Image (tube, rainbow over the protein chains, first blue to last red):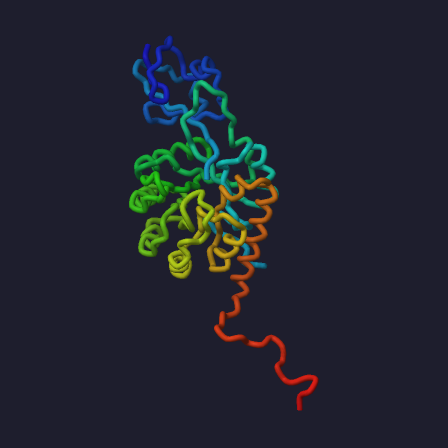
Length: 65
Length: 258
């Protein structure tokens, strides 16, 4: 299925948000996730099944003034 | 000194130097700078993750007793700033938010109009809003009425280290605002931070001047001392300037006087 991650189209097997993050080897502790403009708290990642055409924003805190 | 408490929203701070996490050569310098400066509030930004690269978690370098001030940098409109603020709060960064809406990429001038709109929305949602603006007294009053916890006027454009170029306008805000005035952006030297505090600013926010110093830890301490000196001078009420000299010692004759 196709999803959008940070604006880029990606093809993935059906999975949960937690699985996708694990496959991408991202540091979960630093991540903030928006799914279709809704923030998904980390406790719900394992139960959030991704759907065709979902739009994910993967964000993290960085240095700034 | 009993007037050392800075009240932002309902939170008390005993240190009037706010710092930032941008531009450090390595993040390990941040906790050292915080310890040396005594700063109790520090800014962070929110960005899309580079999925192809490992990145460090900046929050790991900020001790838990330091209050986070997420900014909305990257926002070009009030709507975007509001969205970033909500994400930051959901991510567990607390209620403080620095509104930064920039539409001018040459001088990085804050867009006061969009900033006011974002402040109105976020203050209603219970955020402690610290809007970064060009110093403009009527705007500052509107921000106050909208529920801003403080107003953060710039001294000079971001990252320029030129000091208090907006000094007369800052003075109008300091003299007339009923919320704290925090001079943000442009402060390049401790003496400029001291000057802002002598004028009666409630606090200053310094990032570039500390982070890009050869030794950010020592520079953090220098800024802390300057802010404390400026604050003490303001509270002590400075002597007046005069065109003509006024002797500090008695002028009566001594050796061959009458």
